[in-house]
Length: 369
Ligand SMILES: Nc1nc2c(ncn2[C@@H]2O[C@H](COP(=O)(O)OP(=O)(O)OP(=O)(O)O)[C@@H](O)[C@H]2O)c(=O)[nH]1
Ligand SMILES: [K+]
Ligand SMILES: [Mg+2]
Image (cartoon, rainbow, N blue to C red; front, side, top):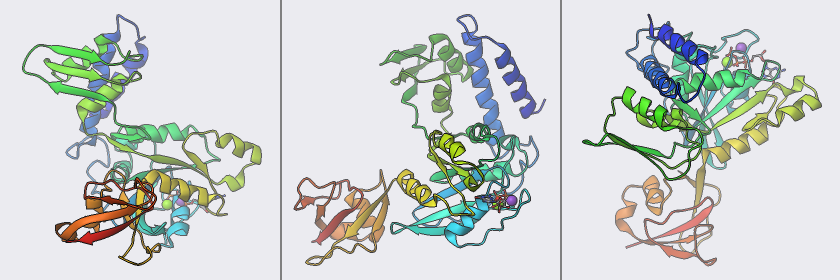
């Protein structure tokens, strides 16, 4: 049996098995087996499935952050990409017009953001259909994913696409699970939870631990709604957590009543690429989800320069990160800085050191030794 066939067999067995106290251990085992088989498909050595050994798309990273476009063929990815960036990416009424990754850039709020148009994928992409694996591999490296959908097609496509990405270890709009698993020398499996668990029982946890040959380990769960999939994600360890916006394209072709319904879908932004409807909302949401921080520099005795911010990533936006992004030498000469804005304690500015964490639109003045 190929890996894909083995996965199919386990999925079939799972769908036939009712979840209850007696089957809980067995279902846990099956879920862990499934995750291990999926890993075989993702790993580059994998020989199973067509297209598995095709070369990867090469996308040189540019700008502060990247946005990748994923969707079925002919939903309008390239039309949107070309209009946003001015880079030509062929768009046409036939499927699979785009055959490789095409990168461009936009300038938004003073930050250069890379936009990566990708070929359309089809259901089964993660199992090696078409060039789906290469497409998803690029999406895995992006800071934000636009899942582009055609509103004239079934909305169920959204869950099919999410599922394809999930199969590749990508978790959309989700935080890493608050679970820790530590291997120990002896003492068996010890499970502790700091909150009551609504989706997990001891048997299935033990089944997963045994399937991963973690016979002595401590499992600590701090999240009431944690699932077995979350535990497996933590053990597998190679998951990426990426924000996604569901871009519902071609709204020029539907009624207002239908549009109202679309607005109820979480994380979605309805647009029309050809008519350029609501694209501003899309780029605003893109900016929010990219979580970038703009810092304006104020030369001593002068007004801040609001035209050219230094752009940093949230989580990497200390004064030290700011200095390093300008020049490596600056931290050596650094004495202190004065910061104005949301991160400062006082309206008239705060004297801070290298460890101070900056906020979006702060103004900074550096004093050297
Ligand atoms: N009505 C309408 N048609 C659109 C819109 N955006 C794109 N299209 C049309 O949809 C077709 C496919 O557009 P593309 O931009 O090539 O779609 P794609 O997703 O890049 O397609 P592949 O590269 O083949 O995966 C073209 O005929 C476009 O003119 C839109 O907002 N409204
Ligand atoms: K097309
Ligand atoms: Mg295209």
